[in-house]
Image (cartoon, rainbow, N blue to C red; front, side, top):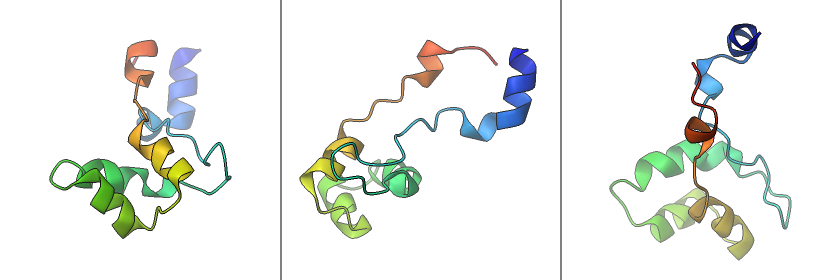
Length: 77
């Protein structure tokens, strides 16, 4: 059964468990997650958030404090 579920959702979704919307204001934040994750490797996270247009404290909190734990919780392939 697990194999069928994985085939349906695909491997590309594994590890993309950022919430779709900010818990406080409801703004969509999942669309900037991949770019944010790549850019913080070389740049200051605050500057990256400013460049991506994430101005509200609640939305910034969602991206800054997110920890990708899905690979540890569900280590099956």
